[in-house]
Length: 138
Image 1 (spheres, one colour):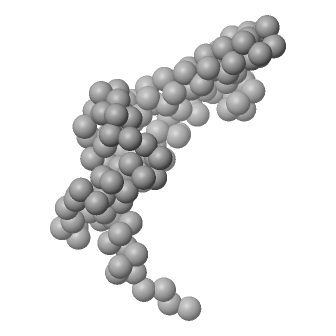
Image 2: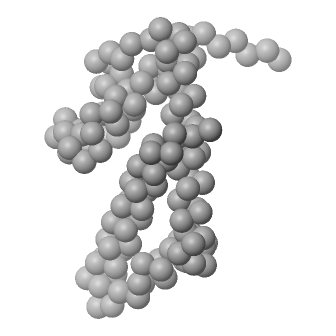
C-alpha cells in the first residue's frame, strides 16, 4: 500500500515538472522558429507521454508516483534497518551528482522542501551502505 497523500504530492510535482517542460519547449521553439511546437498541454502529453486523454495522463501520473514512492519507501526501510545517518559527504555527493551549487540546492529546498534534499542524501547513504555490504554470488 502507498501513502495516498505522498502519492498525490509526487503526482503534483511530476505534473508541475511536465507543465514546466511543456512551457519551456514552446518558448524555445517560438524563440527559434517563430511558432510553438505544441498547441496545448494535451498535445504535449500525447506526444511525450504516449497517453491519449486527461484520464490516461492521470493514470500515468499515478503509476509513476507509485513507482517513485515504492523506491523511496524501500530506501527508507533499508536506511532505518541499517541504522544509517546522513553525513555532509552524502549531501556533497548529491550536489556533485546534480552538477550543482549550494544556490541550486537552496532553490530545490525552497521549491520541494528540506525533506526532498534529505531523501536524496538518504539514498546516497543507502547506496554507500549496499556497495560496502552486498555480496554477489555467482
